[in-house]
Amino acid sequence: MNKWLTRYLEGEQGNVLILVAAAMVALIGFTALAIDGGRLYSEKSMLQKAADAGALAGAQELPLDSTEAERFAKEVAEQNGVPQTNSVVEFASDKMWIRVTTSSIVEHTFGKIFGITEIPITATAKVKLNPLTSGTGVVPIGVDIADYKVWKNCTEITLKQETPSGKNLGEECNGSNLGSGNTGALIISGNGATDYENDLEKGATVTVSKGDILEIKEGTMKQPNKRAVEERVNSCKEIYTYNATTFLTNPPPVECAQIVTVPIYSIYEEKNNKVFKVKIEGFAKFFLLGTGDGGKEIIGRFMEFTASGDSSPTQPNYGAYGYKLVE
Image (cartoon, rainbow, N blue to C red; front, side, top):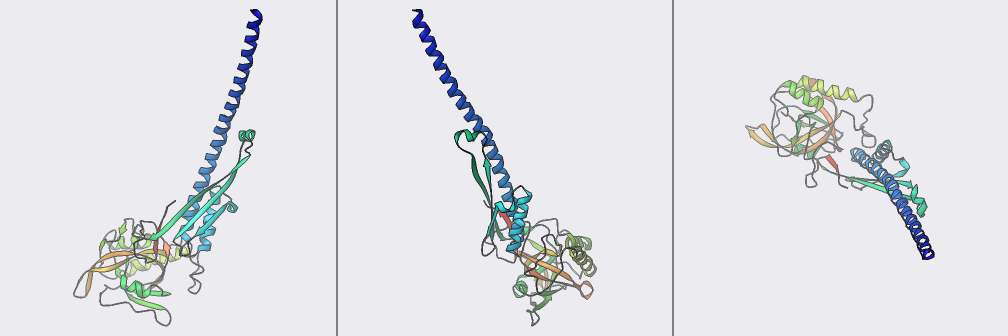
């Protein structure tokens, strides 16, 4: 009896050892999953953050220069922890989207016990550009939609700030590729001269949207025009030098204050050949060059660029684009 009991207990001890060994293997496996899985999650989150930031940064440069957009996207991704060699940037031929893919290889710690030494991971972010439908920072310089179609490819435009007339279409680009015509000073933040000047110098803080009805401001805002435009031009001199010939191949940086968002409008209310109200049809980007005739004229040119605000693929394109992450 005693011999049988001894053999039984010895067998039980062997079973316990087997169970303990199995439990240890399972424990190590769960530990590996927790530690290595946590490391993978952390790395994936970092890659996604870098891809998102890179794509959003590159989108701002994309309408003007895809090469600069790629450089900027990789630079920002690197600032968020991903070496430039580990970032791949793609963009559409029409420059309407940009995609950034970031990658990394994560080494396992406990996973090596099971023969898993490392695993590659990637993250992707895509930003889509669409024509702007609303935004803040808009300046109170309105351009008639008919004039925009005439002037959009001019290398220089002189906006003569007189009360606009629906029967006074802007002059086409002449042999020197210059255009001129009347434009209206718009009331956005308020009816005072100070409100107008602040909106022109800093951009309106209120949102302006397609379909909004805005009033035309009476009079010629000579001194506000001169002060506000000069302030914008002077603030950009240290970072950019304008050259009409190379403007498209050497565009201004995003932070240049000479780049403004202007409303494109159609006439909403007109009496006796005088326009009182306009309807916002969309938005364009305008590069301010200066003023003329003591501030009665605002000189610049249209360009394609991004802006903060809502956008839509069904909105007619006037050169100002909103952008957002779509994947």
